[in-house]
Amino acid sequence: MNRIRLSFLFLWAAAVPLWAQAPQTIYTNGRFYTVDEKQPWAEAVAVRDGRISAVGKAAEVLASKSETTRVVDLGGKFVMPGFVEGHAHLRNLGEAQLNLKLGSARNWDEVVAMVAKAAKETPEGQWIIGRGWHQEKWDIIPADTVRGFPTHALLSKAAPKHPVWLTHASGHAAIANQKAMALAGVTDQSANPEGGEILRDTQGRVTGIFNETAEGLISAAYAKSQAALSADARRQQLRKALRLAMMECLSKGITSFQDAGVDWETLDQVKTFAEEGKLGLRLWMMAFGDAASLRQRLPEYRNLRQAGNGFLTLGGIKAYSDGALGSRGAWLLKPYSDDPSTSGHNVTSLDDLAALADVALEFELQLCVHAIGDRGNREVLNLFERKLKGRDLRWRIEHAQHLNPQDIPRFAQLKVIASMQGVHCTSDAPFVIKRLGEQRAKHGAYVWRSLWESGAIVSNGTDAPVEDVSPLASLQSTVTRVSRDGSAFFPDQALTRAQAIRSYTLNAAYAAYEEPFKGSLAVGKFADMVVLDGDLTQVAAEKIGQTRVLQTIVAGEVRYRAP
Image 1 (cartoon, rainbow, N blue to C red):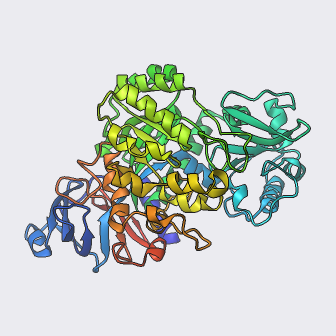
Image 2: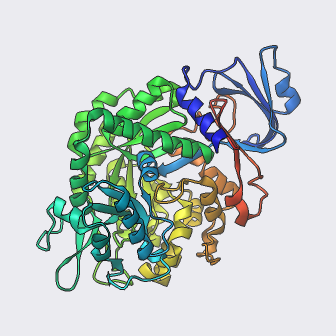
Image 3: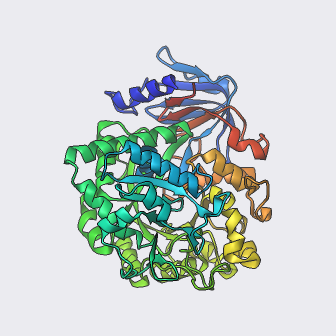
């Protein structure tokens, strides 16, 4: 552990830009899987100025070496293009490491116990923040539930003098204790905001659960407390969270990260990192805001393309059509099978989505819309069809988890990217059929193969911190669709090994207009690679997730080395 920490400390303390290096480096004695159809395998890769200068047979590549060339022997290990995380949240990933990690809790009692422990260690009045609980994955159903969700009673008892705010694993629901609700001014008489719901029991009392846009009621109170911190304290807190997130990504073999929605504060901070030469991996960002704020702020960032020698790009605008399936916020064409009282939520009006589409066209940015339910996806496809008018602008639907079969071919027809996350399938499988019923789940849930065979571009990712940011775990899910309990979720929709790897490299790069310089090992592309202890083209499918990252190489330099 100390060796890892020291190597990362060197990364952040580096006085020279990350892309500065020796005149030439040759990586040899490796099994290079290039994801380049013209030359699928190679024995050596030469790097100059952070880019690949040669790929091929070892003897041919080594023939170019000089007295100043650095030769690195990889010991016969498997090497491939660095993973491109196609959809995740960098700041949230880092902040999750600073707060309570609730994903390991086996039940609600364990969550409450974690909060009680934190309350003893936290000064009175300070917020206790956590994320990762999921009621469908607990081994015991809480005694006090409303529509399957726990209530705040035990939480309020465990921390009566601390405001507590615990976000659902999906990020689309959260639970607050009484203290947090009081600070937010929420009472039994509070109205539901448009696109969200304050969950209540049969007597009309608030339960503490806030679904979709209703989360903003508590989040605003928490933000107010954060605003009381000094500007320097907030800045240092943000820098720490971002550093932690980038360290974790590098340790998982990720060399590029597509951030699915950043605020201006975060964007400014990563821009500072880029200017300092301290971005450990390449970031492609989606700006988030309403149409008015985007029009006001985007002109300041027009030149944020390939900043820091390809380490920072503002390439998209993020929007939301609906919520998540686990919290019953995904917008469905028909009601939920396990709760006919709801069909989910449209969290951004169609008029507002149309306004965001106009902003994307005006500033020549990709529009990237979160859509999980079949109605959410259909409405976004309809909007894209009206706005694109046949143009191929690589607009994206983020998640595309549940589709009506009639809409599957429309992705290819409209040239819309299906930005999906393989690990969501195996993580969500235990409750998907419950939510949708057998037929809807079979024909429309996580239909990677159907989309691929229809001609759509499918990219991959994890949606971290909703899931672990590990590409290897997501790849295993993509080729097996097998959950922890050993059951396979409609395995005919699994991708082949080659397709899965491509979804995490070249396809993910294509989804951001970046395939000319990343996603495969080819001359002229960034020298971004990952060295693994197993051959992903041969290792048993059920063991892909156990493969270890030995080295992560960015711009030709090792940025992570396993202990």
